[in-house]
Length: 348
Image (tube, rainbow, N blue to C red; front, side, top):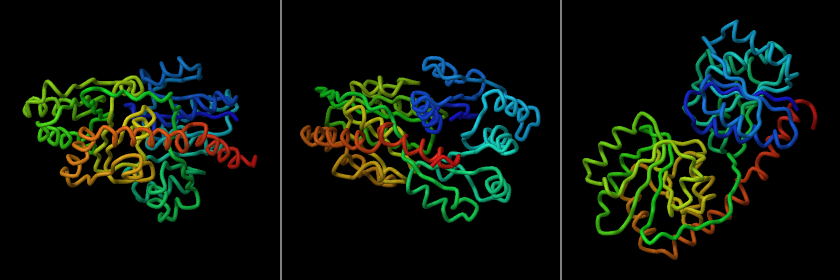
């Protein structure tokens, strides 16, 4: 198959991770894969590293005739058969050009807030998308009630390359948060919770960037946590998590977060909010701990239990790793995505 991935987002987040991982998988399977992104995007370097054709461009305005003409020429040059876009500008330039050219157009939604049932979106998705991929059963259920989407929806979990098992086993429990630092991630409440745990030894390492980075750094100083909380900025999750014991994601809402899967794949126990698609990843008490995103007391209880009970923590680490190997590895999930694209092209 000849497939073009289009991602117009400015920062690296879950949809970009999914697109790049799928593009890399399909590239290794012998398909002809190209990626279009913004100029100076981190995707440019990643594509170069993994030998994936990449075209950085200026997208211009929504529905820009010049941009759509550029995509038309790219599709002809690449003999493109399918185009995969994220929300927003990628859809409204390259996605529209794909439909005008009669190509298969797949759009990917990663959270309930990605799309609203407005008249504009109803028209766009009715006439401009052939398939809509979502990353969890909960998102599928949410969007399937919309009449202009339900026949087009398909759901596939996020997936990744699972590294070798490597339990850190630090003498002082090292906790990690890997996230795009927005208010939705509630990292401020995580800091406030750790501030109440002065009687036990711990470290908290925060990897990520975003609008909340500076306010969170200021809050850590206010709470006098400077010696125990460390901000790493932009990180490679797999390298960052190598020496960590527990990963935390305390969001108020989620689709199916890559970070939780990354924690488990990197041999970390998981504490996560019981929202969105997270219960599709974690069975609380079996391969991780789910807590109430509105009650930080449940978060404190979970943190204390994983500091105090090393055997319990190690049990969750082992079972979480097994869950990822069996259900969220690229070799398990992405062949299903590949088959769906082939079926949509009439090659079932």
